[in-house]
Amino acid sequence: MPDNRPKQLRTRAIEHDAFFLSPHPCLRCNGGIFSFAEKLMERRLFIAYGLSSCMVAALAACQSQPLPPPSPVMPGRQLPAAWRAMLADAARAPSSHNIQPWQLHLDTPTHGQLCLSPSRRQMATDPAGRETWISLGAFTLALEVAALALGRAAEFEWMEKPPNAVQITLRPCQATDQWLACLRQRRTLRRNLAPARVDDKLWPLVDQQRTSAFYLPHGTAGAARISQTTLEASLIQAGDDAVWQELADWIRWREEDARRNPTGITPASMELPWLAQRWVAAFYGREDVLAPAFRQRSLDLTRSQVQEGAGWLVIAAPDDSVQSYYVAGRHLMRCWLAATAQGLALHPMSQALEVESLRHSLGKDLGTAHLQMLLRVGRPPSYPAPVCPRLAPEDFVTCSFA
Ligand SMILES: Cc1cc2nc3c(=O)[nH]c(=O)nc-3n(C[C@H](O)[C@H](O)[C@H](O)COP(=O)(O)O)c2cc1C
Image (cartoon, rainbow, N blue to C red):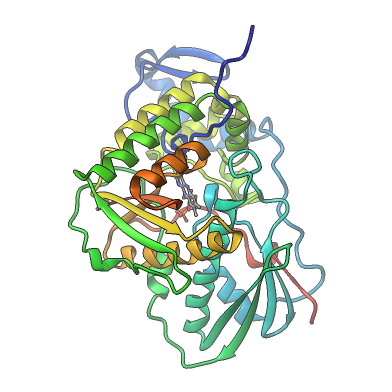
């Protein structure tokens, strides 16, 4: 029988409580389907699961899939304390699926080259490396903020010749920690975003290198078009097994998995309620992400998310060069820090940009050909501390001086 499923795809809403945010008649567990209501009736059993979840999770972890290893640790060299501090803050930058694609080599105490890690990529969902370079750009802006707080000006020079890289030079300067608190507080928030008044002047509108950011409040034709295209893309993506397999690789269901490999998304970063976090840690695995029910739940979630919040922030670039992706990432980070300072949440929803044909048609409709980011904007019920795991600097830095 011919396989009529669409070729392109990808869904991301799964990251967010695909099963637990709204009641659902079925919970799938270890290949079996059973009624949620029935499960709840077995309250003693359910509570016992909760209380003994750490033990169960540890056992279940033994059966989980092998994880991609992090990059090798710096061989036998000590990272200077100032670099360590700056890089720990820079690593708070957002990245698609929390892949943290940054890889840095320091050749002197004030100079290094930043490039993409060969092992932390998303070949199925981001074959052109667009989101990966955006993430790297966000990292450089975060490094700039962290360096300024320690009295260093970080300068970045784009290396055009492939393989592309960014040269980093540090120079002494007057210390200022103006954005450091926002950098440390910033996180992705995806739940219950409420409408809010969003001042147009909030966003740094045009970057020196001509990326631009503009805001489309709900109720405008542009916002409706983004919501509709996001749904359309999610539907297309719901059919591509390669994308779902890649997503499954980047979910760390158990704390132990996240400790061993602190990349990817976790039940806590999906904002699952505490008991649900225990539940999935005990029972979920790769096969659950690949199940049709999971995809359906994620579609349902996307449907409700695109209606929530105040509107959409759009980041666009003058072209689709790798350098423009990188610059868009720096622009993204500036916008995110500005939003955090106002207590506003940003939630990237990349589905519509990951189906190339939809990215182009949406760009045409919005009057800008090279869309790079679409983010929901809204007022969160609270702004909790970041929870997504991060690599330690030693995991992504090598160093050729002692
Ligand atoms: C380029 C890019 C694309 C992203 N796309 C999505 C997305 O489609 N859906 C989503 O929920 N989060 C998305 N995110 C947010 C990441 O999942 C998030 O930054 C990462 O998990 C780290 O979590 P944190 O932002 O709370 O530190 C994206 C982030 C970046 C930088």
